[in-house]
Length: 79
Image 1 (cartoon, rainbow, N blue to C red):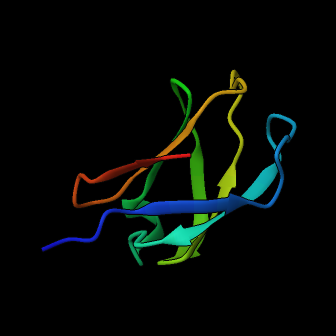
Image 2 (tube, rainbow, N blue to C red):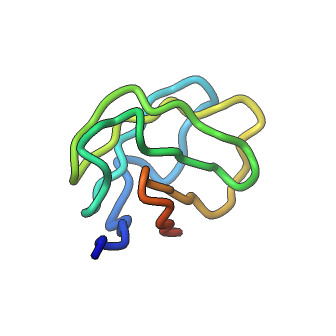
């Protein structure tokens, strides 16, 4: 049985494209590259992290929209 990832908060409610933000939560994959993060329909780059925090580069084309994290288990969360 897998736990669904949950986003609790972001280090910033707004950020410039190319900048780095932290995504805090729980049940992320402990292998950073097994987490996929989406800013609306644009995929972000996971730079590092652990099961409760992801360091993410905000992608070009990101808009103010929901943020989704998918783990290696295929489970997804939305903020």
